Amino acid sequence: DWASLGIGFAAALALSAVLALAMGLASLRVKAIFFAMITLAVASAFMTLASQLSDFTGGEDGLNFQLPELLRPSTEFLDEPVLGVTLDGRLLTYYLLFAAVTAGLLLLLRIVNSPFGRVLQAIRENEFRAEAIGYRVVVYRTGANVIAALG
Image (tube, rainbow, N blue to C red; front, side, top):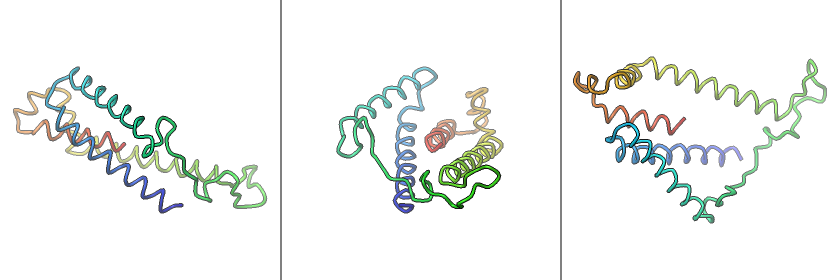
């Protein structure tokens, strides 16, 4: 169960990164509202594609999977509650998700305060000026697009 969950998660991240890179290279040369329009068009096309490939994607219902035994609500780690709280799979799931969200938030804060994030802030404030001082704006915007797809 854990292996298939990990493989699926890794495959989803890899596919998201590749598609974001392809879309970013194709559409980030346009400005402002046109980028949003291209993004919405690509999203609509993929939604239709996922719906049509129901053998592979499960169609509009999606794919079903089974939770690993430790994360199921019926799993109880102790017979008696501790401080009025039952230690079960739901509590473990809660704390795993809490740790994942906290790690994601700290990672995003690190990205924002890194040189990469500072360049993105410069591009946000004045794209022409950032390009004039030597930053390759399309490369940084594509990188940001890939990071956004992974998040």
